[in-house]
Image 1 (spheres, rainbow, N blue to C red):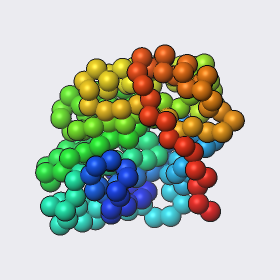
Image 2 (cartoon, rainbow, N blue to C red):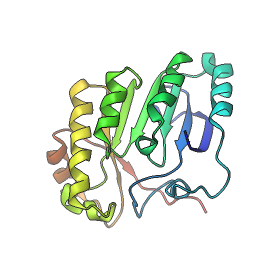
Image 3 (cartoon, one colour):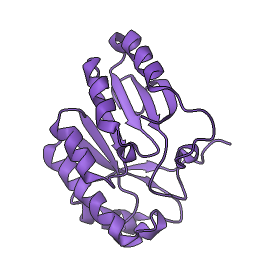
Image 4 (cartoon, rainbow, N blue to C red):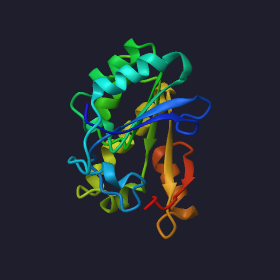
Length: 194
């Protein structure tokens, strides 16, 4: 897997669990408010972190971690995501997958194979506004909503959004709740460092 970043300990990426976070390099969306802009391009700004190095570190620390969060960028665009998740599970680690929801077949495969214990779907804006984050516009929203519904159906995840000033207001958030058919965890946007 193309790993652009590795956080050895996070106390907030999987609430209630101390977790390591693996950041996939590359994303198929271009959110203007992205909090990991260095991970968007398929070509990293610096060297990638070898998968073997991350797995070896996790194997040595697995008894001290509550799990591993696989985030990004967008992990579901990685062709070897499922094999990477299988390696994490083989280490005995719980796995949380953070995704923009654009690849429902990948998320469904991860859940169906027991490779993800929890999924957080980042639902960006109402479907009619997906042109803000994807050149596919409204067409990009369909797969995201499919992922949202699948994750909620199996009750192994949540739907969240980042509330960006000037983009999200209560009316927009209510529209998103209606489209998702569920409550949405709303997180405040914070300007990325640098």
